[in-house]
Length: 526
Ligand code: B12
Ligand code: SF4
Image (cartoon, rainbow, N blue to C red; front, side):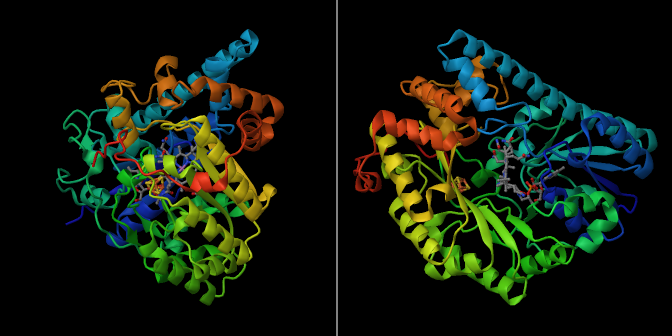
């Protein structure tokens, strides 16, 4: 029997203004099961930094929660774009690779600024959890804190060390865990541990998430527990999150999504997804981000994507736009047509490399030839908007030849969509725990088990920001030159410099992976 005294406060910890879909879904789920439980959402993503503590105190004084659900979205900030503490990649590269001492010094200063802001954010968020719990206990001595969200799922082992005893640390989806917390049931079977009482089980993150069928989020209810909801309705350029499925069956060597969400794909029923979009549409929203790890994770989910898009058309919501991560190897002409008709106007493909040989070595399961064919279909269907192609150089076995192949591949994508429509997003992999790449780093003595994946100390960060020698310094120089030439068009500059230095392979070479007797590098870990 549920404890009717439960008062649940969801605190989304500070974050760039991305719609807090995680806490919205959790509170919706709890409400559907326990309509009498009082709930409230408080989103620090919509609060100016100076007001974090004051705002948190005020909501706790007013609401007096018994359960504080802290949602922490992101921690890791290695990105090629301006992050919260500056451009992290540029600072790191200037520090590691600049030959000019002044630039190196600038990089060191930037890196220091970045590290300071990173550690400040970390301790500030941990401080908010402690502060919130302490204050809530003034009113309700039995109050409890539970932390979860993307950042916690990735760094659950490390974060527990700095949280108050008794805090529940959750991995992955939180629906089933909150259900048990509200019922006061034993948590032993859940993907979580309790600080100071239990330790995370070995391979906890690899455990399967609960199989819960998702229904349309009830936004009529959500707006009653979240007065600041309208903040996200004001900016019409904003993409609001809607989830259409969970899970990814692939094994890409650097990716942790497949572990967080699990390999089993769980489809949210199309009618429910459309009903959810409808509620937001009726509130004026026209831009949606399908927050799935992959919108079409494999060919066998093409029919589900088709069904959803057909139902969107049938619903009459013809003036919407949407974006998503798309595995472009899983498209058909019919699906392409529907994507264009339903208003897809941005997508990201994470092929990582334009060399089929490397794509295979990274265990990504992509056939690059098929990706090109499907992109041609998409263009033929009338797609004229942006595509962001994510490349990460130097993940494994990169050579000048494979770089030339990536350039050939990229130029072909430009021929298909138009130079101005294809945005090369150059990432360097930030090594994440529990990935096949981490295993590889252990086996090759690049990292030692027990390293701190959250460390931004230069000696660790240099390894986590994956750019190993012998090509590391070469890429370092190329990137520095690209920032110097035009930091606003970094990706295209990197491609141009690489082509100037190395030339471009024949496309056919890029698409053909020589058969190897065995992939020596990466052993699967699961
Ligand atoms: C879609 C997505 C994006 C989209 C978001 C679009 C949008 N408008 O919403 C885009 C492309 C913009 C994006 C950008 C970035 N992202 Co992103 N993104 C994702 C992705 C794939 C899904 C997130 C999502 O919305 N899921 C659906 C919702 C419903 O799930 P959820 O919010 O996670 O909530 C569930 C659980 O986490 C849990 N939960 C949440 N809170 C709590 C709290 C408690 C107490 C409990 C018990 C449970 C719980 O229950 C919820 C419901 O099941 C995840 C990876 C993944 N598969 O999870 C990465 C992920 C969240 N992103 C991540 C990062 C780092 C970023 C960037 C910062 C990357 C960068 N360096 O630039 C940027 C910038 C974001 C920003 N804040 O500015 C990281 C965060 C962890 C980390 N490494 O620090 C993740 C986990 C990927 C990863 N493994 O690295 N992202
Ligand atoms: S397809 Fe995407 S989400 Fe799935 S494992 Fe690969 S990188 Fe991760």
